[in-house]
Image (cartoon, rainbow, N blue to C red):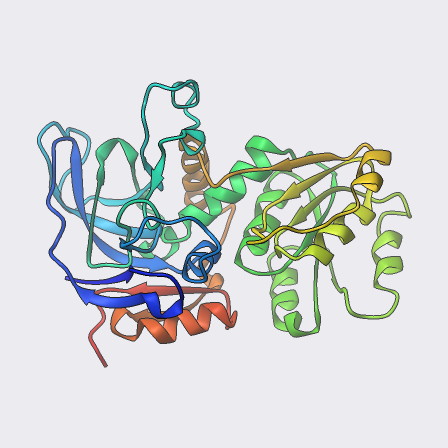
Length: 346
């Protein structure tokens, strides 16, 4: 089968190769990958800014169809449509595993970085890590379950948006657009900010329910944003850009005792005004990917149309044209780029 593999350091260390199809074990299911989204974490792996165990098949955002169920599997049958957790290998006995906090296990390995992932025709995962896709959710939409679950983890499980809260989202990419919809589903009134190059993205933010959008680069943008809060500051700031300046702007725009939710991954050390955060008694929240409960909530949000992801799927590219797909993602062309293993080499 075809697979995109991170073999060595650097951009040239990523290759498309023919590899053997994965074999199935006890309590495992084999999945034919429908599509796999390119995530910011994948780009960090390519650029050696996120840990990985080479050689490894990349990709962790995906949907697929079960083609084989191993011995001991009772809940899944061939033709079931599924997604799965990323943290599929943990010790199972530490205090974090016992609490269901799989991402925090010291022995945790995730698909696409620690074990083989979904930039391939097939993937094998433990049945216990899989979730059936609701009938009303398309296979394309289900590809975005993982990033949506990340937003759920940060905004709903680790953080909190209350009905009536004034929420600012910095960074109108895929995660920002998902955070906008999750915050609205919880009753928040959301403002989305970006830069001049985000003109079309800010327009979509309005379509998805933002009550205002602001270009940070325009003169007087800070004053405009504060005026939306009657100069009191926002209740919640959700940083999705992974940019140092964005982080500091969020801290400045929060009210005293407001909540900062860090969604964006910086990929490097950054500086922020910790004294201002201290003097404002800001609650600083983040979240490391997802936990099992995050997926259950994310799938319900998709099933009942609280979150709409179709407009966030901008590019669908054959695995044979993987380099083009990576360029689209790295250059932020549109929103989500999905690699389709079944597309022919055209």
